[in-house]
Image (cartoon, rainbow, N blue to C red; front, side, top):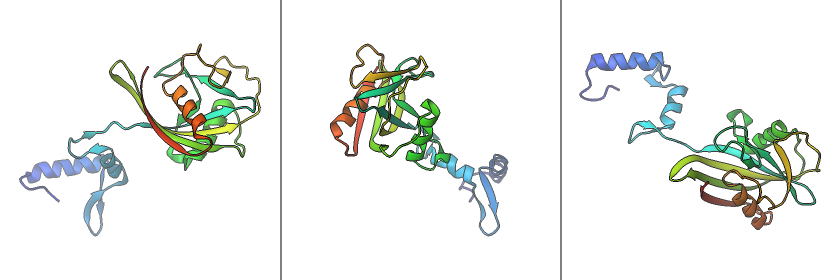
Amino acid sequence: MRPPKVDSNAYSYHLKLLQKQQLIEKHADKGYRLSPAGMTQVDRMSSGELHFRLQPKIITMCLLYTADNHFLLLRKSKQPFIGAWTFASGKLHIEDGGVRQAMIREINERVAIAENDTLHHAADVYINASIGEQLVSSILAHVFTMQIERSEIARTDVAWVPGGSWQDLQLAPGVKEVFDLVQRSENSFTFAEYSIDW
């Protein structure tokens, strides 16, 4: 396991350090091997450049709409793009077990709305959002739609907006593009990529 031309003292020192950090573990039959934490570390590292790769944030996003074509928008309370309006969305958690379960959890957490049988996985969308030439966020969004009853929500960070009528609202990057894509797809699954200068 020791690479050629590596001093045995240096090798021993680094081996102990990796064990202490629980990145490798001793295996009864095969000497040392990567631990699960070590495998995670390797999975996120560029082998050519030996640094951690930036990876896109994976989210679920739901276009909640009513029979009379009003859509529920939420104002972002966190950076990036704080204060801009977006659809109900949030990061995928490993413990969710899948994208549908993640979406159900998010709409319940964000607006206390339960899943119904109209929940539909409509698209996957990759969004790179920049300001000027600086990349600010890179997102892979699993986009769902779901029809709900319109209800009054006594919150200033939630708004019911007629479909496409958001000229007076500052939208988060990708909101208009996702809306237009889903409207064009006519209930068939689709994929798109967008680079947006905000």
